[in-house]
Image (tube, rainbow, N blue to C red; front, top):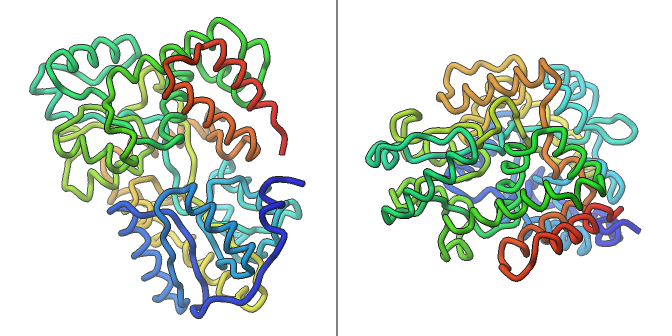
Length: 403
């Protein structure tokens, strides 16, 4: 039996007092602002929505499983798992033809992830996030006569100079997702998309065991020298805060960080910068926030109504702007978005036109393989005693796991 299905043998029980309940892990300042607007949009549309926040995606997933086991699941939830995994484990809501028709406004790479095996719409996207982004404190770079590095060799030179001058070059959080984003940026920047696809998505055994993968792992861990010991007790927003406080220069994370910079009143190109990770120019590695709706017949009408509201142009754009990503609709008005979002949107649309967008590993790997990949990278990052060949063997084993 599949891991998620095993955790959810007991299904839907009584509904919450509100029409709908959303379980989510959005707790930073900009995320909270987005959730507040989401709830307000629901109220304006006549839907009574309760929001339940849990700090940390893994904690939220654990609580979601526990809620199913207790027989009191929420009516919808934020999740980073592919929809097919949920469809194999629990009954999903059919959001109906009106919502399905709105999917025509979405990029194919997003719309294809929103239907169950019967082709029924069961989830809605809120925005698109670019993951392979380098965030830079422009104030500190200018003060030291340095520029944003465009390739990995330049990044190492710049980081070494910053460290020699007593600055913290790289802020990072403790989560496995932060390590994975950094590793993917190294792989895409050094080895390219074809290697990424064959090694990490298709689990090519020769590539996983080869000299290039060993070198990529070694470079990944070498970046730890530019970080600090405090990383073990902070999340991604805490790492972004170090840039805002002038205590760190760089951060690799998704463009949800843009929401934090905007909330602080910082201006792109003046106070901070947002560029593709070194060597990643032209590659848009992305994920998107999605809400999965669970089958609860008594609440289906409210679920369908909320799903339709969230896909309306103005609502979709406002939610994306608050959180820091880009609107998910192709026809979105970008006039109110800052330069970082405009740049990401242009790269996303260009990538879609070329057919070379890179969908995140979280949406493409099974639950066991994805979790194993993150665990191996986190352990390798934390332990100087683990060798690259040992990490390669563990990566190959993790990526072979089938749910």
